[in-house]
Image (cartoon, rainbow, N blue to C red; front, side, top):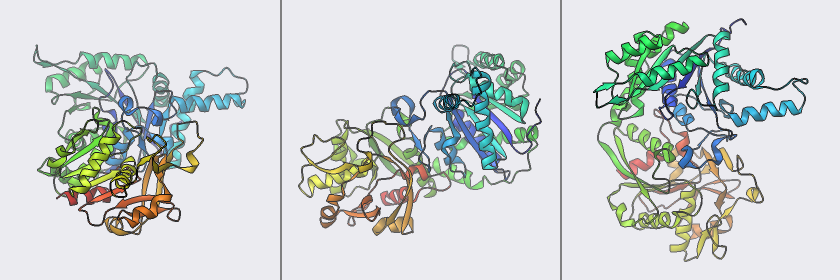
Length: 524
């Protein structure tokens, strides 16, 4: 057996029974608690799909695509990591089958395997382990927490689990297995059989859990914990209750109350902990108090909660900072009646693609502009604010190249560098860019510059900048010698600001994004 590397310790998080149990939240919550021990915790997410990244996936199928500062499109669990932790993720921290296989095949084509028959074991698993270890070394990590996506038993994640099995014999590791513990009304009891079968499947691939996290409607009762401990060969204090809660930000507190990080710390011989959770607990208290505002998110992906996850969370962060909660309502822009927005304190027009629901968004923007309702436009939202203004104030037959028929005046156009690109994955304007600010947004950020993350192909057409500003729509944030419009605003409106960026990606629970904070303040 190879000598163990004592500089980094490893925590693996797996899931069983079914997907969607919240392994990412478990990983983020455990990491948050371990961070209080003055440890550098680095999260890694492993996904089984063959896509290189989730950038080309429909939000209805996969949920929100999260964008990192380096421009990598990654799984939405990175949103949980960044919102919970004092960390900025990197593209290499998200492994996919597509990335792994691409790298292995590239090496084979270059002859780096010296004529060997390239196989899942050891070549793919070695590639995964090397990838994990390189991250640990580059980041000088004390703890690396590896979330294996999917469910134990899936074909797609078998090689990740095999790599984890090998790591268990090579490094100092701890394995957390998340399962479903359903409540059966006919018998009035929590059923442990799905958990037992899930752990059996885990053992079949050579892994044993050190801790079992039971997802359930209510807290696990003592009888249930005893049964899981008995059949899964863990101590009762290693059976953790993860019930449905009023806010995901309560999960670290719930784990803290059950001594989760103390249990892990004893096994991995970690240093003593500072109690840095006071501010966190106070903010959670705010989140479950009276709402400071009622906000509508007007988009086309309103039938799936995860589609606008970061927008929703950024609003919650701002509300907690202001001492309360926020009531969020999703409004589909297909067939919208703008008058229904009267009962809202503020409106968010989120990012998106394509023509579906566009005219409804434009109608909502016009209604907010004319009735002094605070409006925040994000990415596509900014572009549609410009289209609306060009139509209804400048009197132009305006559209965007993204949804126009070519006969209108294209006040929003495809970026010059985007024209002629045929591949869709990873080819948009992605990642962090710095804008020069003036006007109200300069006051909002408290700086003459702001760096936010982007994900788009189209921009406000520079040919219309002067005409828009002459007629009252201020371009208050720009890039590349004012060639690119990053922010637009109306000075005589309570709050009418659009940004080409996605500032929600730069918001965390204890450090809300300034633009979202200013928006919620305006709704009051």
